[in-house]
Image (cartoon, rainbow, N blue to C red):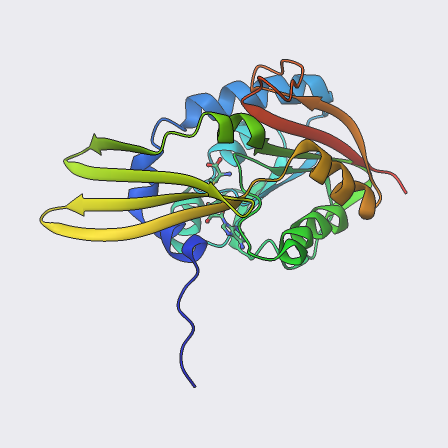
Length: 246
Ligand SMILES: C[S@@+](CC[C@H](N)C(=O)[O-])C[C@H]1O[C@@H](n2cnc3c(N)ncnc32)[C@H](O)[C@@H]1O
């Protein structure tokens, strides 16, 4: 039997280059958003929180410091290994595929910083919505922080370069067949590597349908980490707040 080639999201997010390219998406940004969203949601200390696709755990770690019991799940072994150095009685990390249901239920489930739309088939992306639903307690709250696809598509930079720590990145972006693709060439110490990101450009309306199909009720929608109201024409982010109450 031939071994299947790893999917882009299995290889790219597991590299140190992903973390280098997105190094401005740091703890400071995570803390700013979490402070705002926790105040808005009026959560109580001790509430249990799932950070689905947590990466190295920047949101999980800060949520835990605020007094919540936090579980972070991610597919990337390297990111989870890194996150685990912060584990405590009330902070746990685990390698887990977000398409598969998780065994516990939580007061809040977060899916943050465009950790959605990675799969070719809509039914696989929908599995992530089902995981969120099945991980929520009755009256539990879900938060998905996605890009505002129409604005991202309108402002797509076709080509640019970036350099950090003597690593050179060449980035090419396009929008085709409903997917935003970023081709990433990395030059490091005389070697060249190729990666990509390919994200389904779901819109507010697509999420409305997916959420209602599993009985999740949309409560609110914000357009930035400052929690400005969502505007489909101008907002950078699409931050959906919803409840499981059926
Ligand atoms: C854009 S990063 C965001 C990470 C984190 N939420 C943050 O804000 O730093 C997307 C994350 O999704 C994870 N991921 C990709 N596919 C996954 C899957 N099938 N199951 C769980 N996590 C996955 C990646 O490993 C990566 O850590």
